[in-house]
Length: 435
Image (cartoon, rainbow, N blue to C red):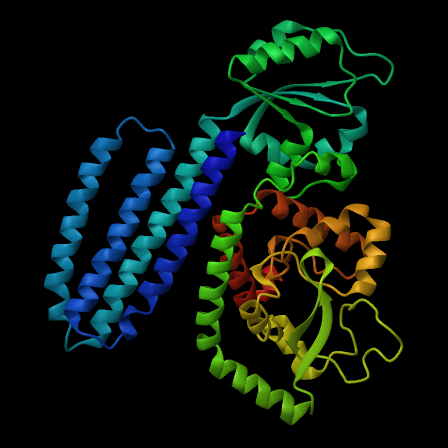
């Protein structure tokens, strides 16, 4: 399990960085700066690429890391030398400069492809062996994620209870496993419990089926957990004073930069709504924040003024209450931009569970008691559920979103937030694919 989390996080973080580098390289040909600055920036970028490749190799435990470091140093020196020689020669020919930047992009894409292949090959050659003790109560849940489990692990055996008595324990099975997964509903004999303690005392992992399921899917399954599971302090281990301070600094820096970056688009949106849909342009609504405190949330108005004359209701697919301008804003999530001012005020964070109204919160708490746990952290403009989950048009989709939110509450940290931000940008730019 530790391998899955560390390798996947390192891999995802590297791909996020490489995505940034692709964007920087693609805009190089249009930068109007001195050529020595272009050469220096380009050399730094390639240096970062090689450093992260070296980091990836180190995280995969390769024995030839030193040799690779020497080779990469030679490559980096060659790239720096070539940049400072080539860029001055491209001063009078923008087409050649564009072609040069395009060739660098193709090279970088090849590097990304090689990382993909290296990661998957490493997964295949270092699969940890799983022994799973599973109750028949969760058999369907296991079957749903079996392909994903087999992609990362090598299940050696799945032992079901028979709903009558614990199965006969075979101690030799533990010798074949690197990790043992135990379902909380599994009927366990005393002899098996003692053997699990021995297995754990030797430095091996014994994890719950909930931990396996959440690690594979990125969400906490509601049908496997209850209030008592959270009262034990499992879910909120990351909500420390230090994490809150780091998160607040991250929110202020990012919100300030985004306000400056989107000041012109927000002005254009303001004018478009005013001309085509009339006033008011900004829609203000009372939402619930941390600990259930109410605050005014700001959004660009995307519905007609009489949208809720019949009372609050869920937003449907192709909802006729949405204006024509609002339809485009919602498609690219641009209606959320005024919430940056809520972030600056401290009402919400950049990343967190989405804030909803008290009316819907009361309905969802009556249906899903664990829904109230969302109020233990600051809500956000975007979140883990917004990147990976459905929109939330009905109770079934809201349940899935809640599972993603609970996983975020349990595992939130600054790197997780950065990953969510980049996932949100990707979803905004490609709504037809990720929306």
